[in-house]
Image (cartoon, rainbow, N blue to C red; front, side):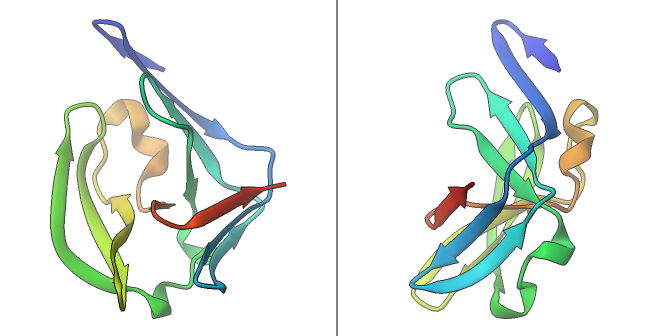
Length: 111
């Protein structure tokens, strides 16, 4: 757990089955995701690379910086830009999410 001026982030195993779907196509399915909980943000599931259909994704030129997690790289699908991101070198306090994929504008169903 990290806490800076009231901003808290925790990362740990999630005891759920997570599926990421876009336009009816399953992009990822995992029974061993990590859940990242961050102040002011919805819970996010980070899926191990072996559970993601990376062959369907195209690397994007988009990069973002989070002062708490580090620099993220993004992937897209045709007609769906930047719907997946990952941290290749996350900050030490969230090191567990290294190279795990997190899905944004898709349906993520836990259960």
